[in-house]
Length: 302
Image (tube, rainbow, N blue to C red; front, side, top):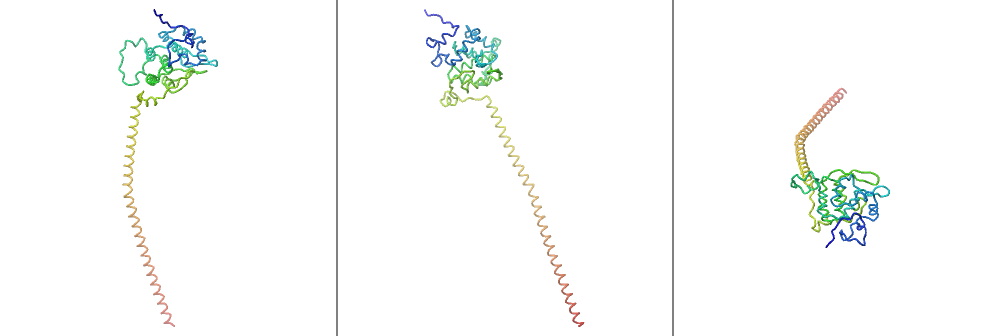
């Protein structure tokens, strides 16, 4: 007769590498996903000994509901945050994937009687879930324990969750959002004082035909903006063409007028020059006649 399985209250079996016989994550002890120094600080912390003692997959939701921030270690001594302690507890429990998905989209008892609405977009799941810190805790566990394809397909819909959350730093707090935390899980190698295993890029998984190309929820808006820009450019080019044709039409009569005026002025100047030449020749002839008459008179007198 097989012995019933119970959740161990302490982490002795989890931290014992020689006698560990529980569930494995990628062929190794789940506790090894955390660094040794972080594991020791967690098991020696007051929150772990009091609040995490005897937790199971159901009672852990109550502790996650009381979370007020996310983070890794704080202070000079590297005190672990409650968020990190609960994540380590999840590694000890290794719950089923259905339970983790329930953590991810848990909406509470007040939404049980409401009919489920049909999903209209691919990212509708990212708008579910009333407990944002429970969602962040489940996403952090998924990034640590699940396979790459499951990580992308499960966490990418959460990029539409824009709720604000607090993040604990070494000596201060900062304000961030759920989608930013999810993006850090997908792109960074270290977060919350934990070194994450190398996640293959999405492009590589698409090349291997393990993932479909991701459709952005802003794709329709981007296409609409592109259409508006194209319409503005075409409208602007048409207006510029009309203005150029109008300018050329308005300039052509003025140019003809200027040319006719120049021709007239030139003809007038030519006629004026010819008249001056004629008057000069006439005056010169009269002077020569007068001088000849005066000479003849002087000769006759002599």
